[in-house]
Structures are given as C-alpha cells and as structure tokens.
Amino acid sequence: MDSSRKWLFVAAGALVVALAGAEASYLVLNKGGGGTVQGVATVPTGDVVQVGGLLMVQNRQVHLLGVVAPREEPDCRTERGVVVHCTLASAGKLAELVAGKTIRCQVTRRGKDDRNWGVCRAIGGGAPAGDRVEDTINGQLLLSGWALPNDQHGRDWVALGLRAKNAEVGLWAGTVVPHGVRTGTLHGALEPNDGRTLEINETRMLLYGIDAPDLAQDCTLNGVPYQCGLRAYVQLIDLTAGVGRVTCHASKIEGDDRAYGKCGFPTPDGADIRADVPTFNERMVLSGWAVADRRLTQDYVAAEEEARKAKRGLWAGEFVRPAEWRDGQR
Image (spheres, rainbow, N blue to C red):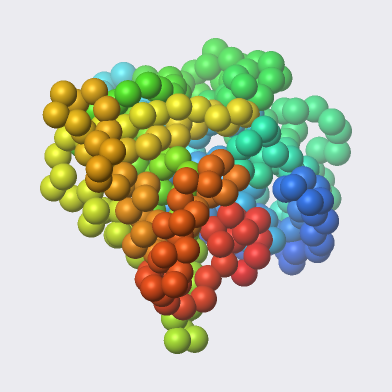
C-alpha cells in the first residue's frame, strides 16, 4: 500500500473511533458566542476535506483556536513527491485526540468573525489538569504536526508549531504549502466548495454578505428532513457551471483570517464586475438557497425577502438559519 493510501485508511479509522465516548454533561453559553461547552466531541465527516481543526460539541461547531488545518491533499507531499491526504489525516488525528473523552471548550468570538473559537481540553480520566497550552487539544494537534499554527492567535501556538516543524513530524515530514489569503481583484473560473464557499485561482473565499447551510445541515420539507446543505452546494455548482472567466473582489474583515468576495460577470475590459447582472452572491439569495448575512451588510436583504415571499429554496420548508445552526440550534 502506498503512503498516501496508508494515511487515508489510518485517518478514516481514527474518525470512526471518535464516535465512541462518554455522555455529554452540560452547556453554558453567553450571548454573542462565548461561554463554555462540554461533552462528547466528534469531528465532522460530511465536509472533512474542506474543514479541519473543527469539533462538534453539543451540536455546536467549535474551531480550535491557534490552529490552521491543511486545506486539501495537494498541500503536502513526501520527499519522494507522493501526495499525502493531509486534510483527512489531520481530521483523523484530531478524532484520535478526542475519542472516548469528555471535552471542555472555552469558546469566544474574534472581531466580526462568525466562527466559535475554542481552547479545548480533555477532563478527567487522567487527562492533564494544568494550564499549559501544550496540554490542550489544540496544542496536542499542533505538536503532532498535523496542523499549522494560526499566527493571528498568539505566540504560544506559533511556538508549538515550530516544535513540530523542528521534529519533522506530521505535515512537516514532507513539503507544506503555507497558509495564505489573497485579496484584491481576482479573475478566473469558480470552483464551489459548498453553498457559500468557492475557490478562484487557488484562493478560497466566502461569498460576502450571504450565508448558506453547511454541508452537514438538514432542513425539513413537508415535515420530512432533507440535506439542505448539500442542495445549496449543488445550487452554487449549477449557477457557476460552464460560466468560464469571472471577476471577484476579495477582501478581509476585522478579526477574520478568511477572504470574502463579491463575484460576478466581468465588464468587457475585465477590470470590474458588471453592474447590470446580478452577482453570484445575489443569485444564491434570490434562489432561496442562501440568506442575507445582515451582520456584514444589508445589500441582500431585499433579495432574501423576494425569495421568502416566493417560497424558493429553503423557504419552501422549514430551516434554522445557518449561523444559528452552527451555534447548536436544531
């Protein structure tokens, strides 16, 4: 078995192990996304290729503070050039760290970033009880080498990443593509990752001002559950399929390390987005498979209202708004 397939099977096995554990105990949340969440932690498997460094605790998404998971398999190669499925391996290592344990996460928000960032620890069962960052789940994942440090989150995480790099373990045993975010005006073909995330010229971005169900999210139609996250993903694929060259204006927002973009058909000179044609951001909201993100802008509120009145997409049934779903509402 070649090394890339070996890592794939090892990681997949660890994901299965992570489904075992003690029963959840409690959840204490503060308004605005902070607080403490405690219980069994699992690693989402529906979109594992796209998201790493992410736990589900008490139905709440918690991103590990200080951690940048590898994006996808071409990001790391061995010295012989063999591709390692490093995103899946990273998720598998995280699953191994939380399997069979009760996990407590101190959760916070950073600026306008809508994600829940957590410092997570195993409690009881002989788990380290000190305050050292290397004893956290975050720190252990970094020390394993299967995640990169997020330099926006403090020196302690960078120091742990450097220790793994010097030890040449995990990702550092091969070649790692550094994490980076491009901003400005980008041109090219769009490759959707889910209902609100896409790539253009190897740059991943969120469609600015809108939100869509995650791949793992379910909604109901006529009282029957269905995979609305998957359906929203298909809608963005349908809108962008065969379109060819587009233009995106990418930027960042306060406290968030991701790129946000407005994407549409280019003007004849290719320098801007055509104003007479709806952007892909607006098209997703008009289709009913995305909603307006009022936290960032009011630009798509009217489009959302139009879709709601016409009962398009999500509005044909019942659903929890994606941001609330990520925060544990079901």
